[in-house]
Amino acid sequence: MFSIGDFARFGSVSVRMLHHYDEIGLLPPSEVDPYSGYRFYAADQLARLNRIVALKDLGFTLQQVAEMLDGQLSAERLHGMLQLRRAQLANQVAADTARLQSVEARLLRIEREGVMPEQEIVVKSLAPTLVAEMSDVAAESGEAAVGPIIERLYQRLGTSIPEAGLTITGAPVVYYEELEAGLRVHVAHQVAGAATPGTPFELRELPAITQAATLAHRGKLSELCVSFEAMGRWADENGYAPCAPIREVYLNAPGDPASAEWVIELQMPVEQAARA
Image (cartoon, rainbow, N blue to C red; front, side, top):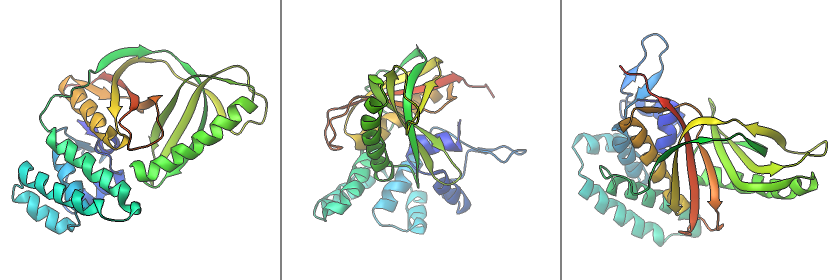
């Protein structure tokens, strides 16, 4: 079972969107704590969430989406519909590129439903890491909202870290913090040395992690959501629960989001899930 925040992250949607889907009966949580009111979701609900977002991106209203899903829309039929939408988007202006990538990612998720991930997931410990960090708030999750913030903050860090007398020692790190309205994006560089006073960034230590499930995503940025979902399913099937924000370590960042050369290690702190 996942908290609403973790489920939103694995599904690449906002918590606010999940609240709305619950209110209209489109995707109610699997369980609701009778005392706290906290919502919890099951891993197998990711398949329905994928279809909701995919159909919504095709232009259907939420009422139409509900009617189609309750009519047991097949994966083959949805696959064909998404292929058609992909062809339409390819002929639109460049401003639609981000939306096209989103549809392709949802299509890839649906194609891989019930298939074991090709990526190897390894549980290991992580040492504490000194980083120079900046953060800002995105209105929602997703590459279109988060990507420009990450790019802007890394440009600032790339200039200010050497000016502060620090040395970059490792790959960039990104992690996220769920807020009531939006998502705080934390961007960091691993560094060494002593910073001069008055730096525009925060110098802090990312804490050690006793157990982290790690997976190396290789491919386009738009396909990163598929690796997140693979980690969520793995955790559920192996009796683990996320216990801290997932870190994204950018081992190879070619710059072009459409490049297939991205290598990003996902590091998910985990603990044994409580048995019902």
